[in-house]
Amino acid sequence: MVVLENVSKCYRTRRGEIYALRDVNLRIEKGEFVVLSGPSGSGKTTLLMTIAAMLRPSSGRVCVGERDLYTMATSERARFRAANIGFVFQMFHLVPYLNIVENVLLSGRLSGRNASRAAVEDLLGQLGLGDRASHKPAELSAGEKQRAAIGRSLFNQPQIILADEPTGNLDPDNASAVLGHLAKFHGKGGTVILATHGPAAREFASRTIRLRGGAIEESV
Image 1 (tube, helix red, strand yellow):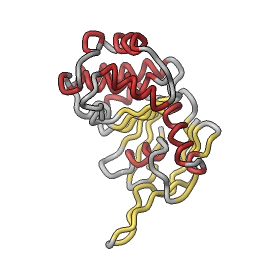
Image 2 (cartoon, rainbow, N blue to C red):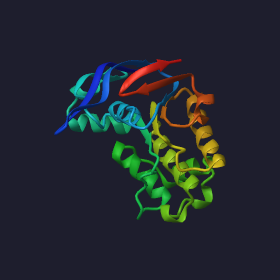
Image 3 (cartoon, rainbow, N blue to C red):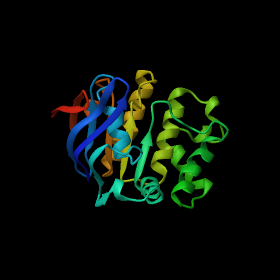
């Protein structure tokens, strides 16, 4: 379960205060597939980063499960994030000098999980990357990079996957494959929160939340 209570994120500039989030109240139940929609600058990425324990709000509470994220010490919050939350970025953020197996294993080490190369290769095989395991990111297509990023997010068996425009750089076929893998995680009881401009993910959603100006405009 994810709960946000009166969450705002304000940046102070020479031109005054700019609100990326404004008094957001939101409850996402375990096992939901939630799509965050809205124009650029509406607050989608800021909301994801706040839920991901990566961006402290200016005010309000953010709870994942029974834990209030921003009352934790920084090191404790990092461990909690590594163990419970997977993140898929639009720009992949794979380590360029590591091959795909090593990229996935790195996520396990950060969370304190010990795992074998064979376990990683099995996961990559399920994602259609069995023959690309020893390749570095520069040797992969955009779709393969995003599937590798999904493998990295799945490896620690998180409760939640947060995805920020995961299909934004992909052609329709690869976008469909990526959404299919996220839907499969959801089908096994995982929670997915996905931010996107486009409509493709909505067919998988149990709920769509539209943001505008940092506030929730609609939830259906």
